[in-house]
Image: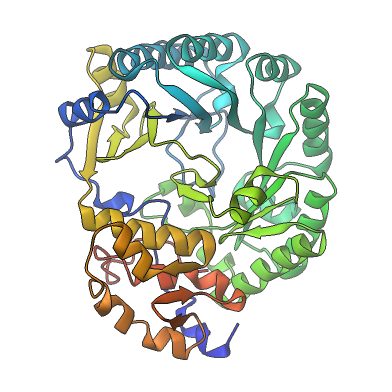
Length: 448
């Protein structure tokens, strides 16, 4: 990376898993609006389903998810009953659609247990047309995966799992309250593969407390020894004002921006040497993985779950805090577990906020998504496809001059290209097209 780019490392910039980003959602979109959007979906529209389970047995200090700790069955049983009710309500409006992607997130979604998981999957298969080749994925804590749960995953069609690893550095594990050995993770992979689940992703973090470049390099070597299909590499986002449990992490123990960048490079270089393809900002995939094919074919997408091969026209979020993405805009369920429960119990959709997309929002979202996925955006072609005049984004393109001077991007005939050396700062380039961004608020994660 050009030494002049160092000035951008500490900037706080959205991760752009959507545009406009989640902080701009407001109560202007309510359950009535969301219901009308669902009802307006064409019969031919394909869907993606996201199910959020906001429970864990223990809380990891680094976590940025909406989750709560429970070791009792009663809250989980009650949640599952209401999740089934929500599925039925959604199916009453948009049931029968073809579904080509299902993703279970959390929290720890496997905490619901085998019987509940089977029941919910039967429910989904009963009210939607699940494609035979649908990707059906779930996030897993390797420390808490029973043989019975593995059997339930295989029986219900799960074909991809994301295993949380974060780091194998014992000191960092202790600091983030996530102690997990390589052996535990290896045994988890072996059980899944023996059950026929071969799509295995590993999630790693850099920028953790007391983490070093050497420790990151050791972690990725151990992760690669498990031969995962994909490795995701995220920078830890320290936002204690939003996630109070992160206050357990001493900010003085966190590496600075330059050190974070060196850690990111160490992990990435190891993945590339092992033959993985770099995908967008933070993923690596084997050559035989569907994400590598999507990148090669220009069909890589990005949504609230990050990089995806999902081509569905609408994403339906189920559960507390889950976000839906429809052609008309975004709709988020109440993040408060109690509010979500009470609303679903009353027989109403739990939409708490959202955002109706304008034509300009959709156009800018396309620019940002192509930059985040391809490190390239053909501005004239995108403007033409969305019906905008050729000069619509001239002001944003003019603001690129400092970035091109500093080696973050090039601009020729309206085509923006982010060089490989500047890939870690692609969010900075994308942010030029964010008409909502107020950099003075400082509520986003640092650039690297």
